[in-house]
Image (cartoon, rainbow, N blue to C red; front, side, top):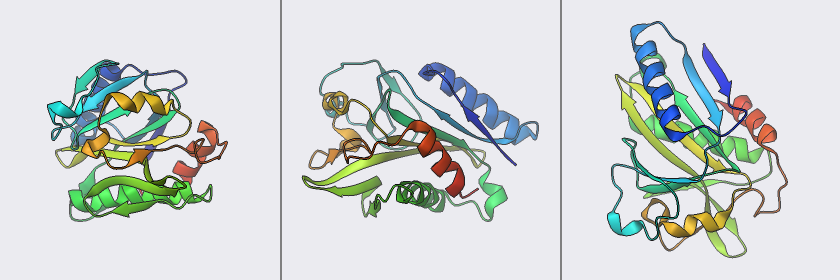
Length: 203
């Protein structure tokens, strides 16, 4: 059984980390259910375990070093963050690579509800879409695993201020830009996306 939580106001990053740590411990001990938490953060940058110092171009917002995989990314209002705390041992042989693919397929299926064709690209984690100005990233993926239980998850751009990405090289990739549903001309709400995420969840 997966519990779905939804925050009605922006969640502090430290609060989110503390919640994930506590929930993962509870799942490991058998005292808590798996959980998907849908939320937004105030503007901030996070640095994954592969982040390069030179990819922080301008410290416009607070920067948090985090244990998830990946490089620098941005979180802020207008972006749906979905933190997934699930036990991979309950889903067959634990396989982190397969789990990342499951996350990406989940986002692709949710975007398809809005007639957006998202794709994965070899060597580029995340979800990409074609735009009149070339291929751009619409969703990021970052994962950490403890006791074969997952932390962190995905972030999908609904209608964030895309200029906020200019302080970093998103995910270490400078040759491709970022986009959002709004940037693609799709006036979807957070609730619309949440329904699509819940409908297509793989767990």
